Image (cartoon, rainbow, N blue to C red; front, side, top):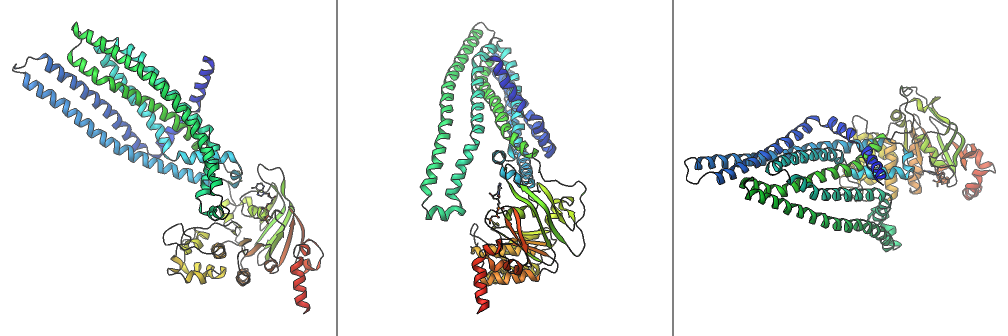
Amino acid sequence: MVKAKFFYYSSILSSLKLARTIKLVWALEPWKTVLVIAFMFISTGLLFLSLYALKDLIDVVSNQEVGSPEYGSLVIRQVLIAGGLAVLHTVVNSISAYFSELQSTLVSEKIDDMIHRHTVDLDMAYYEDPEYFNTLKLAKEAGGGRPNAVLMGLLSMLSAALKMAAASVIIISIDWRLLPILLLFVLPMFAARIYYSEKYNALRVKNTPVERISSYFGHLITSELSAREIRSYNLGDYFKRKYFGIRTHLIGERLKISRQRSKAESMVSALASLGFFSCIYFVTLGAIDGRVSTGDIAVFVVMFPMIFGYLQELTSGITAVYSNNMYVKYIFELFDLRTGLYENPNPVPIPGASVHDLTLENVSFRYPHADKMVLKDVSIAIPQGKLVALVGLNGSGKTTLIKLLARLYDPSNGRITLNGLDIREFSLSDYRKQVGIVFQDFYKYNVTAAENIFLGDIGRAQHAHDDVVHASKLAGSHGYIMEFENNYQTMMGRVFDGGHEISVGQWQKLATARAFYSAARFLVLDEATSALDAQSEHRLLDALKSTLDTRGALVISHRYSTIKHADYIYVLSEGSVVEAGTPDVLSRQNGYYAQIFDVDLRQENTIAEQ
Ligand SMILES: Nc1ncnc2c1ncn2[C@@H]1O[C@H](COP(=O)(O)OP(=O)(O)OP(=O)(O)O)[C@@H](O)[C@H]1O
């Protein structure tokens, strides 16, 4: 049992990331951290000096004869010393509080920034992994403040230990027997507090996956994205019940520990009071036989609650270190995650040649954590100047292929090349700038219309309004944007004041304008015309073709009206290219393509015959 406990506590100690935490905080704000520590020590020193001065004052009052010539001046001197020290202590405390706030705000902002940077740098494979979401939730919940809280917890432990040492010296000077009595009666309280705070933390970590599920249901109830379905299918109560079911269970577990803690605390507090009165007994005995002065008794009575305060500070310090360390552990876990995408240490510059080809050569791909190959030996060419189309039934692998083109994942086998060079030779960010993608589930940014478009190339030194408008005209969004009072400065969406909600097709046009605005040499539209009316679709494809003198394009669509504009078509079935050719050739073959667009082709033939 003892051995098991020993291993348990040593495993807690080894999971502490104290050295790394201190190093991190120190690296971010060294001088302000020194200031905070210095003020903490000065404040502790002043506290004890003022206490000692108080004891001297009481001894002067009780030892000097009232009316003696020195009495008045001695009392005034002692009052001035004790009062001056107390005032100085208060002033130092206020300055110290300001520096603590300044230092912790700066450190936590910088760590928040690091958490965001690391999250953005990770590749998409992490988004397939529930473990990653747990780590991310705990790291985000931790926020930037936790590492500093660990350091501050350590310092407050140190400060409490120093104060207790000083208090012990004073207590021993009154009567040495007081110290062991105090320890004996007060230590159980200390142990109980640590034990229960550790229990709370263990529970929090254990319940994180379940809490994530309840947060998900909570999000469903309140989110704008699910609001329509929740109302039209009357799902509010259903998800509320699920949410409260989990919350009730979680709260029940926490309250069970709270009940146990209250019972234990009432017992150890009673024990501590017993300790206090035992000490009072010894002190009064000492006063009777003259060993203990009135000042000593006064200091003991003042100090006893203070010792409780220090013990409380020490316990809070330990629990702060322990509980914050739990979260810091997840921040470091997040920092230690590395992108699985290969990044060439000596990247090749993007070719400056005027003609470019983006090609998949015998590419196969399996998602991380999945066992099925989603793409099998796929070879596709997207030459500059051409509009290439990719068609296939749902689940055939079209979007997956685009994710590989975006280098969100690397192929499991085969390679993707730009002008014959493996795209892994280029730096990830240089390569990604070459491909402008309108994703099937593009994002609706609640920012201005202009910003929605220039997000397509934020690296551009100046976001020339003419370029934004040009891209917008190509995508077909210019017309409705100009109808808003503030034109391109109009806030899109209804999340913020003054925003305008627009239709799905209009959002899709904005997302397409973003891709047009980018400097990409290849444009990829994944179902980007799905919400467009026939006229808008036709105009968009004409506009796209007009930009192909310097670009190549790949479109994915289930609509024949989009596909028929392509120069070349690849047909994908269950992850393999089963047919390829021009629209004319494919429509004459009685193959897969003809089957998918059977109705459209027959309609077209009928019109042609009339
Ligand atoms: N993140 C993922 N992890 C594991 N498997 C996935 C993942 N995303 C997609 N798949 C699987 O890969 C296959 C191809 O999906 P993909 O989204 O590429 O199809 P698609 O052709 O774009 O379909 P749709 O026409 O419906 O958009 C499907 O069987 C799907 O279940």
